[in-house]
Amino acid sequence: MSCNQSIDYSLYLVTDRQLLAGKDLAATVEQAILGGATLVQLREKDASTRDFYQQAVLIKQITGKYHVPLIINDRADIALAVDADGLHIGQEDLPLHIARQIVGPEKLIGVSTATLEQALAAEAAGADYLGIGAIFPTGTKSDADSVSLEELRTIKAKVRIPIVAIGGINETNINSVMSVGVDGAAVVSAILSRPDPLRAAAYLRQLIALAY
Amino acid sequence: MSCNQSIDYSLYLVTDRQLLAGKDLAATVEQAILGGATLVQLREKDASTRDFYQQAVLIKQITGKYHVPLIINDRADIALAVDADGLHIGQEDLPLHIARQIVGPEKLIGVSTATLEQALAAEAAGADYLGIGAIFPTGTKSDADSVSLEELRTIKAKVRIPIVAIGGINETNINSVMSVGVDGAAVVSAILSRPDPLRAAAYLRQLIALAY
Image (tube, rainbow over the protein chains, first blue to last red):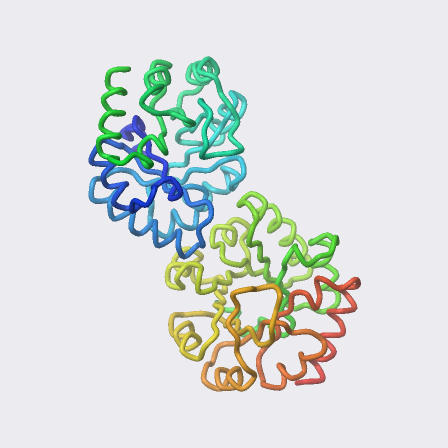
């Protein structure tokens, strides 16, 4: 993507409707952006296609309003349907070269990787950024592989595209992750499940600024 | 789709891996085609995107070999990924006009409908064919609406695009469905769950020929 250099990955929000504790997803995303989330990935693992599409339309209105990039998890069709800024794929999703054919050259494609080998392969195949994890134990992805901070540092040293750490990151440990030199931290429950998502995001942004 | 006139919808196979009773999906689809299935819809409700894609690649090799159209259920991204002949969407999938934007003007789009109102709306919105049902009680779709043979006859009289009846159709009742004048009968377990899918398909084809 031509504007890849200008993307701010630092506080990367990944959604999960199951963690909202009754709050509205769109309102929570808006609060997170107002607090400082720099990018939003819409992740819907159990929704029907119609439901996912409708959520994506709603979230796109918010990310568009604040000029924050919207990334769609897994579903290239949904990314096209709402003209999202990108697609995020894991090892259980479409192969990267097929996803690229579908979404075209302009959209960001991020790839979840858990090893240096996967990271180098995704970079070589044209990924725009990598999501690396899980860095810490997490309740949100049961099948998450684990990546140590030392492995994260090694991967960061060997790939040139932006790297976002993911997995169990919150206000107690985000400093240790950012100190490795990654381009961003992806958070889920550390914003979504908090009673005040704006303050939670603002505090994480402050911690990120201190770590740089 | 420009070649819509030449599509033979008469024996429309819809897949369901849960009904195979241990048989291989690709081998079963090939047997069904050899027995006379005229069109294959790949339906994967619980598969990961990677799994769905890999199944679609395998099934496309078979449908391509026999020049039988391949339709992908629900997922426009998978339809694009394997360059299928079409996409089939239900009321819980993408809206038709969005699906059309994604797959383009050349691919068939079929729409599941259960009322005359839905059928006319889908036709007006550019559907290439309709799947109407459930005509008979079925174990394969728990949320299926029900459509009588009389309603099916009414819909057939009022829409111009091809109509495929679906829902509980097998060798005991396919004659009553075809007698209404529909363009085809969609079957699932009446081929997939049978020990000899080739013979099952051939028998259904024979019954269809007798009904015309």
